[in-house]
Length: 68
Ligand SMILES: [Zn+2]
View 1: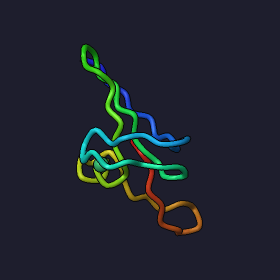
View 2: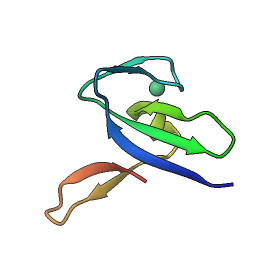
View 3: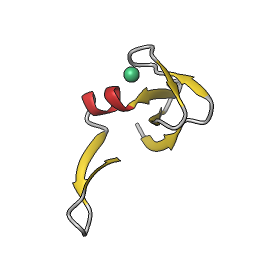
View 4: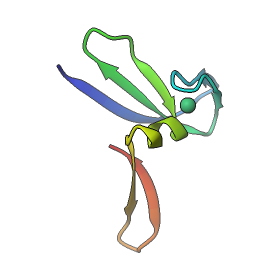
């Protein structure tokens, strides 16, 4: 099975498939696509819960979160 995740910025409005919340621009969301399943859109909170969003430090030591 293959799956891929992309981190996108909401344009307009989408509904999170995890918690059902409406997510609006300019929030980020994860677009998760797996074989034989409908794609899922997850808000940052749900992405974090599922371990799709990781805290990293950039070269200047600033903390940032990026999608896998
Ligand atoms: Zn959510």
